Image 1 (cartoon, helix red, strand yellow):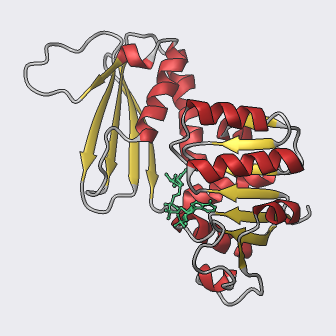
Image 2: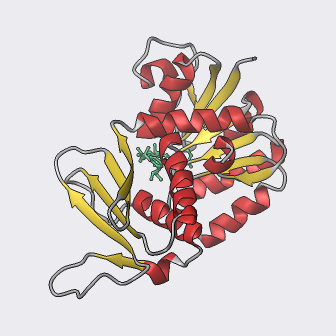
Length: 268
Ligand SMILES: NC(=O)c1ccc[n+]([C@@H]2O[C@H](COP(=O)([O-])OP(=O)(O)OC[C@H]3O[C@@H](n4cnc5c(N)ncnc54)[C@H](OP(=O)(O)O)[C@@H]3O)[C@@H](O)[C@H]2O)c1
């Protein structure tokens, strides 16, 4: 298998620097370059130094078009506007683009779909292979079980997290709802407190715990009469997102145009 040449857009960000390091050090991948916004501080710095490695002889650039030309796949965790502009460069060059940036609205999703008519684009708000596999398992279990089984989703994150339930808990809730053939907006039951009355039949419940430095833990509980099934995922570091993105890059490089998800990458 030939090495997959990885370009990193948004290379100076937290995820960007992690991607530089993994692309430069993971067998089967070679770092092709990294860019930041035109005119940003640090242009010309050695990418190895930026990634906390020895110098690599590659420098931080600002020319995204040249990055696409030099790469088999460009991986990006940045902001919505640059991610969408870069998807258009992917369309122009036919190169693969893996996007983990969150906060892309419906109009942005439509732009991605348009660009994906001419390039393979993988987009996922959660690039972890484990979480995406868990979502597939949750959908399959929800499909197989009688709707009399109650579904509850419990998540725990560090004390600094400001939103609840987590985006991943909602992703798992959508997987459960899809497996059961119901609409999550109708079924979801959140933040129970006080005299709530008995559990609504068919509800998908959410509970959020916060504390310490927990990176992210999610459990989906299927509770029946006399037995319980629990499917869990525990993240111990943000590297799982970068590793998933690299797996997606290898999968997408040279593939037919289309807008793909991590489910496609995993083949589930
Ligand atoms: N899908 C997943 O699994 C997953 C996992 C983790 C994070 N994320 C998402 O990934 C994104 C980045 O997260 P982060 O924690 O790495 O944030 P971060 O540290 O703020 O990094 C974002 C980087 O993007 C850069 N950027 C902005 N505009 C640019 C442009 N025009 N061209 C090139 N680079 C540009 C920013 O540069 P400036 O500082 O110059 O603006 C910054 O360095 C967020 O949307 C986050 O929610 C997704």
